[in-house]
Length: 448
Image (cartoon, rainbow, N blue to C red; front, side, top):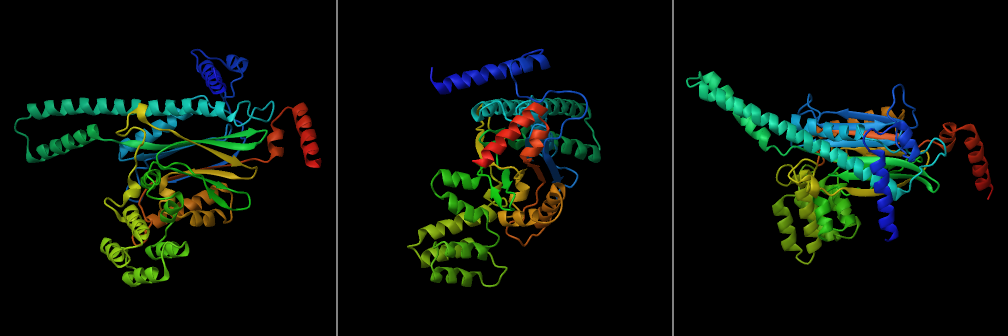
């Protein structure tokens, strides 16, 4: 048996023990399970955390996004209900509920100050957590479908018994029949992203598990905002996987703010010559004009040798203005949709963090409407973490209402964040002898 197989078997054994029937706190301690014990009373606050959410102005009473933040264990979850209306809301809440009800790894052991498990072991445990969430989603979908089918059977019996309904009654029953039929066929689903922070001897780390197109960021303590390269199961990812776009080219498209701005970006990076850029700017004319399909075709016939630029222009247009508000709304997978539970690919991303950094997760209502630069600017303002998230959320909502803006997309939005505490704060949670030893080691390391 190889090292990797032995590690996986070890993690499987621990996961089975942690989740065994009639599990007790004493048993978890005996096997060394680094989980948050479910207990009554107030929980310890280990992290500064914040959450902000708002429904789309198109359906202000129906927020289909859901989130969960555990300020004791360092776990955050964001779920974004898609294609489902009320069902989308129920499904995203089921995804979050599946995590909230599960055992959770702690960022660090209060007896040592470090996570007792390697990244590989922690990642395997989190895979089990995600599977619990996926199972909760499909169980909720099954429950709702069975209820809709029972309601449809009852409605059919009512319609058969009422042979001479009034026009008003017939209209009401027809509408209800259509609604139930759509609900049964509904592919309501949810995207999902989970982040778990861990304090290791090599520094702070985060493990991110994701399905769909939610976003993650690291706000460095010096104010720089960095996007976490989470695979997004969206249109641009499919183009990069197929080799049609490079990751850099996909970023040019995803961070565009206007047609003219995108043309300038292509020129800056050498994808367009001065003459080609001037041609496109002239075709756009006034500031309000857009890159139409015939404009791109004219460009291609005028500059046939620059096929790459024509491809980039076409991908840009399809992403923002293709059929159904653009291909940026199209996902290759989501939990609960047409993809079966067994076929869902859960992506794993590892992130290096430092004390003072802030880790953020958000639904696509944020990054669809705002660029990375705009998000950074809002987070740089005054106020505590909650104030900054509220301001950022409001900026995204305002943009979503601006019909004339390239990025505007009406959508629900949820943002979660946690700040990595300084070492002194971590040490304050440890027993006094451990604090003294840890401080001694820190002093020795600083003297070297």
